[in-house]
Image (cartoon, rainbow, N blue to C red; front, top):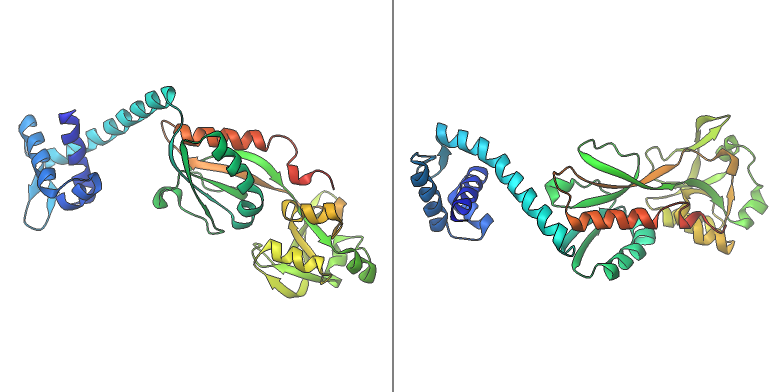
Length: 302
């Protein structure tokens, strides 16, 4: 294990660029970091690093050793983790990012149930509509709604997310129920500025996608706010079905243009490629997939 400690310190110095930064990364002192690398050089009988008062740089032998050593340490860590995960209860800190509205309305109850099921896992969940870089920002996985485009991630589809048009009964009594997507252009609409193209709503007509231009004096960057405005009778809203589900069941809004619903989105779990998937991530992905199996709960009962 002493040789492994020396190898890890050498790799850390190469990646961090200095003994001080490498020592901070591994929780020791710069003096101990230098001693471990010197011990490694003695065991190998070759100088691995050029040292000056301001910087360190690899020798030719040092660079060659690093290039071979780094993947071996990765393989060792993967083997170590796979054996431990096979014999232990999943545990540790799990960092997850998810969209603000979907996370707050739909994901939170499921994560609470997961926390009860796996008490040894510490959850750190960030709700944001910003597309987070999982690797750069230290997240274990993400839940996203839309069409995944990051080919560097492993993607598992969890559910369908429909986008529907709704309005309050009194609004429909005043303006009439639109019979075709084109009729929406003549009605006041609540604009969700989070849409990729807020001024055009997605429908399907005769089996083909159709983008209909819309107008309205209320613009919100939040689907819940758009729904609230629609409930108040201020216009039509185009929102995810999970946002409108409770209002639909209670009769505060009605769905319109059911037969012209646009293409649905997906809800996905994403996590980085790895030789070994950490047990804490694996059990969460499986838990989510089980909870979302079949028709999503928000699409039932209205």
